[in-house]
Amino acid sequence: MTQPEFRQVDSPFRSHVAGVGSYLPEGVLTNKDLEKLVDTNDQWIVERTGIQRRHMAAPHQATSDLAYEATLKALKMAHLTAQDIDMIIVATVSGDQVMPSTACVLQHRLGCRTIMAFDILAACSGFVYALSIADNFIRTGMYKNILVVGGEVLHRFVNYKDRETCILFGDAAGAWILSRTEASNPQKIMSSHLHADGGLGELFVLPGGGSRMPFSQEVLDNKKQYVTMKGREIFKNAVRTLTQCCHEALDFNGVNATEVDWLVPHQANVRILESVADHFEFPKEKVVMSLHETGNTSAASIPVAFDLAVQEGKIKRGQLILLAAFGAGLTSGSLLLRY
Ligand code: ACO
Image 1 (tube, rainbow, N blue to C red):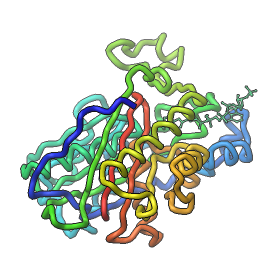
Image 2: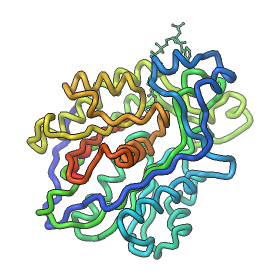
Image 3: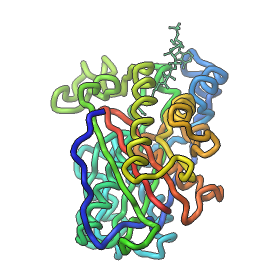
Image 4: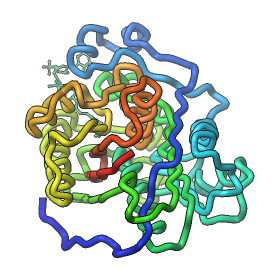
């Protein structure tokens, strides 16, 4: 990984995580359900991915609907209302529509003021990208409370005749409220590092419906409206890149891995996460994993895994948490925070 020159904004302000929330739609697709759709079986899926089920949005639900539910929970924890939010970022690859943005739909539904709202597309790294953007807006002193959401209704972009991809993905949303705090507060975002390697973009693609390949009958006939991936190549790159991201965050902060209470990585595949733990020399029991229940929910995966770990009483206030992300692009990033 070639390192860009890096320095953080020098400021009296930092962001702390005031509230978190997540939402998993009620519908569930189990491995047994998938056995009826493609040539696969529960044992293969569990052994090769760790996934047992994934949640599926109902036909009437789009990404902003999931984001809305997650946001209400995050606002409640933060003791804030929609009126207190100064900016909204939604990380997604499966927004309600191409435009307007899902963030704008969410802003209206929440009843916010006419605050800045936009989506970002960095696939499975989207939430860490969005947190980093929000953190920098807070560090500059421009905004006080920022809503950051990772939300996906990915199942609408998956071909349920392609056994390599359809077993992996699920729908979910997770939301965080970042609020301004003093730089002297230990409970804050300490650093974020983001990367992309566009040269490896072809490993995970959703080609149809953009300006290069607008929708046509041919696009639909050739199933170009669905994700395609080179799973084995992604696997190798994910392990290497996630491990580098973890080291980068700790090296920058002069922190030892033994000081980290929880690693919350993008939930792609249990074998990827176990391999990262081995390479990073980090105890597997301190790696937060929820993908048995959720599958890979792309931009939603880190905030959902984080919130479920909070609900289970694993992640507690004051702990040191390392987020590590990897996704299509290929994008990657890390964020170290004291919760
Ligand atoms: N059920 C049964 N057999 C299957 C299935 C399935 N669902 N899918 C593939 N196979 C078969 C293959 O056809 C192959 O058969 P062959 O040996 O006869 O050719 C065999 O299983 C082994 O295939 P591999 O691709 O080597 O299997 P692997 O162990 O690599 O697992 C998997 C495949 C699960 C896709 C894995 O590579 C993976 O998780 N990759 C990462 C994918 C990912 O995370 N994508 C998300 C996008 S980016 C991101 O989120 C970070």
